Figure 1: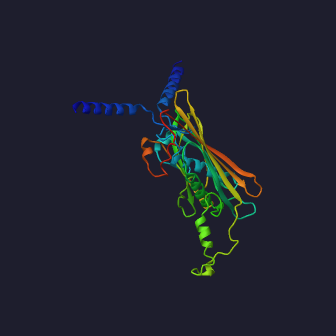
Figure 2 (figure 1 turned 90 degrees about the horizontal axis):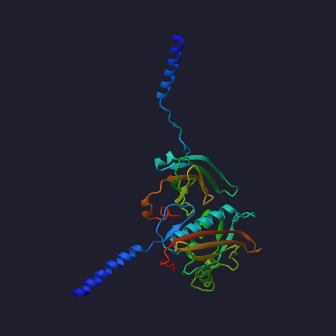
Figure 3 (figure 1 turned 180 degrees about the horizontal axis):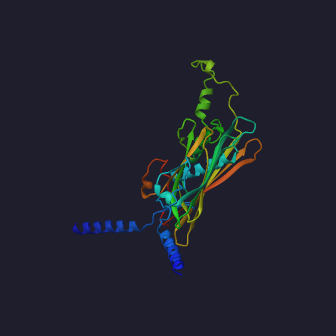
Amino acid sequence: MKKTNLFLISILFIFLLNGCVENQIDLKPRINDSHVKIENSSLYEWLKLEKINYYKRKDELLIVEVKFNNISNFNKSLAYKIDWIDKNGFIEKSILSRWIVTKVEQKRSFIIHGIAPSTKIKDFEIKLQMPSHDDNHRKDSYHHEYQN
Amino acid sequence: MHNIKIIFSTLFFISILFNGCTKQPQIISSSSQQKTYVTMGIDRQDFEKAASEIVSSLLESGALNNKAGGRYVVMISDIINDTTQRIDTKMLTKKIRIAILKSGKAVITSAIGTERDDTTINATRATRKNKEFNQKTSIKTGQLINADLGLKGYILQRTTKTADDEQLVEYYFQMTLTDAKSGLAFWEDEVIIGKIGSNDTVTW
């Protein structure tokens, strides 16, 4: 009988101690692709890269589609821009490369879709930022598109 | 004299107070949360947004891909301004021209259309029999290239009142790419920009 009690108590202890083990934090990065540049680390907390798809069409224009997910329980704002890069690594200046602010609803996905402005484009980079109040004060046309 | 000063300063303060009551116009977009203060009329950013979306749609459609090889020659046709504002439509067409040329998918003609360069075309030909010019550098006849496609557009405006007694102004940028030979529309698209603001604000 004593042995049974001892056995039950030891099992109970094992369960109790098990609870003391720290919950393992998921360190797996949610956004891990060389084409996506996160410029505010706070975005890692709620933004998850679901899928990235791109290919060069027959007419030599690169087409890109990236799907993100807002894994938080809050609606979030996000600013993004696609930089189109030529074969020499230079960023093409184009009206197709503008900062755009969008709202991503909680637990909803969000898609960035883009087409290269030129047949010379070989690569792309998607920049993501948290919109801030001073965005409106940026004066050059390639940063002044936050309201769109 | 003292009374005039008091009246003047009172009026000044009242005008400042009332000025603060006017609601600034804000841009509205289905994809935007941030409210930025802009005008109720069409501004530079609206032209850039419209041009960007139009070019993106045009390139994505593949309508500029010449199946016979080579590049199409595109003419800028009429851009009709059907708004209450005086708009220089070059604000839109220039951006589209730049983007089409940069894309490498087509070339734009300056020989015909609403954005033709008559000075260059006519002046260089007017020197044909002028002895002051080296005639070897003269342009022979029959050198101009005709357009394969024409880009035509409309800018429309619709103004309504909202339930909150505010003014809602919508601008429609509509573009069509027409094949000059067959008259068929190869591509068409529309970009809508909506703005909401006080009724005290005017668009023109």
